[in-house]
Length: 325
Image (cartoon, rainbow, N blue to C red; front, side, top):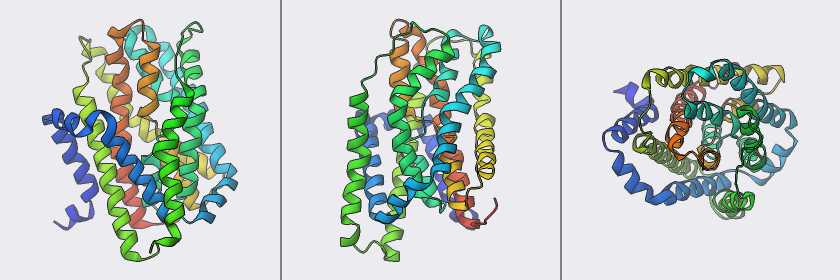
């Protein structure tokens, strides 16, 4: 019983996975067409704005080695490694799966989970937030180009409205965070009870987002596929994520980052956003809609994997808080 109480977040994630697997329609009903997830994200960044002091947010701008490490690994080294690994075996894989394996590598870090896990683990939350926002804004332009280069088809037309993406980021991330910063000194934000409640709100929102991601995975219709050629690449996504976490820590050590920055690196660099991946895949395969379900499968599998592992890693880092992990 004591173990369950100490590991309740991880146990809750497993329970939500089972619930979404048995009853994915409930997740779809709760999701309200994406409204619930966006509301949860807004609440997370409102609470983050209340918790962070303005000077911390300004100081994060100067962490140039951390920013260089996160974006360099996330949008340069990971796409390159993925292309080098997938290209030699691309002819043996279903066509849609090849697009799907390149897709997670091309998109930027997550908008929400990398920030919250960094905060829970005692990392540089302000820097994680800066990288989440900047990475996703840059990703609107960079990610389609990366995907085109990996596919080797320069004539592929990807139609994404960058202003729509910027507007969405501004509405669900920057606006609630700015409101939280404005209210920071008007509320008892340094009170331990307030911080405990804020942490519980953020954890509940993350669990809700995880559950909705699981539900989307189990509701997705991928059509008729040759599972013998699909399962192995999908199973390899788990060790791939673990290797990326280890690579992130190696880069952090190489850059001689402090503990708080290393924690941010561990959660920001290896994570990949689902929010940009789905519209990108839809645009790329507009003329081949029969491939869309299979193309989305890798990122739909990778997304909950990174959330599950992120929750486990965050708990260990928070509990032990050692300088060298």
